Amino acid sequence: MASDKKILLTTAYIKHKNDYYDWVGSNIPSKIRLSRPRKISYALRFIKQNLPEVEILEYPTWDEYEHALAHSWDVVGFSFYINDIYKIKEMIKFARDNSVPELWGGNYGVLTKGMEKLLDRGFIGYSEPEIAKYLKKKLTPIIHPPIINDLEFGPFNVTRFGVLFTTRGCTHSCKFCQTPVFQPNSEVVPLESLEKVVKYYKDVGINFIGIFDENFGLHRKHAGEVVKILNKYNMYWACMARAEYVAKQVRTWTANGGKFVGAGVGIESFNAEALQDMNKKFDPKKIIADLLTIKENNIGILGYYIIGFENETERSIKRNLIKLKDLKIDLNQITIVTPLPKTQLWNDIESKYGIFEDDYTKYDTKHLVWHHPNLSKERLEGLMHWGLSMTNPRKSIMRMVFRFHRLLHINEGFRGFGMLPRSLYYAKKFDTGGYKIFFDTENGGLLRYKFDLDHPV
Ligand code: SF4
Image (tube, rainbow, N blue to C red; front, side):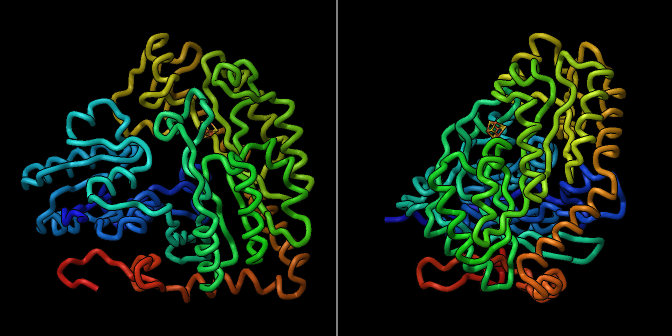
């Protein structure tokens, strides 16, 4: 018989209404820009979809958290990242003071030293199977929840897009990355579930999908089937994947009406020695050739580039950032080499140079946290800001918008002119009244969920 244990899972709390991590804001150095605030916890949405009896709170205010804890729980769990740790510690203390019997932790933050002492249980990797065991439930194959992200401009939603995770985890072993520690094997999300969520997006007027797998194409055959689903529903889509894979697939993905429009690719570095040291089996010349192939096919590129490897100097970084600028990629995310807990890079840097930063909010890849042999903290962070401004000029964003419009026109004819305004219209119209939407796996249809134990839906 299933257990009736009561579980509440929450993210870190927010201090004020704009206290969300914004990827765009931390990478595009302009005040007038779009933003994509992280208001949704993908991890908690997956857990709730697959184990509906678990209650979730996403980025609550402190008052909401306090109010939630007034109900009696067998377990309160925290899903967090390293830079959330101070808030999570406050939340843990409050839960202990209020005699919550058991406290859990999950997501990448649990890899941080010291957290194991504060929690009764830490979950490394995707936790649905373990939570199901705790609830004495049999877990069915994983079900993908509907997840709709906003792109905002000031206070307005300008568009919405559907999020898709087709696989979870990564089998590669890049030295700086926590994923091989967190989820070293990779599982596929069943195709039936993916089709169901893509159909849902289409039904609510969403024509754009972002595939957020760490590395789309890790399971080649499955990825091929996913593309067929996207084509069936006539979806525009983008993914995060290796440049080599995207360059190889780009013609197939855009043939016969395929609407692949953009890729986030790890360029990582033009520094061959550093790439080798990071276990990245890349040749910088090959990456450049692959990026050019992707560009030739009119596909938007978001490049992930890292600076501050141990053998780099101000001169070599500047030289390579200029090379990056000359590639005229649409958007570049530039980060600083950051040793993250439990990675091989952490051990190497700690023993060789020492890690000086003990403020975990600085482990956001935008700060230097270790003793670099050639560069000071100020200089390296200055180079990153310089690189971000230089490689992301406003005209490259305009170029991307223009190209996308052109592509819509080519694909949709005159209808294409109306697609973006229509998207704006749906962004405004699509309003769930604060409810989170899940599939109702017991009765069919949809479930509207809001954490409100005082007034259950
Ligand atoms: S950086 Fe990407 S490819 Fe490398 S281990 Fe992490 S998720 Fe996998």
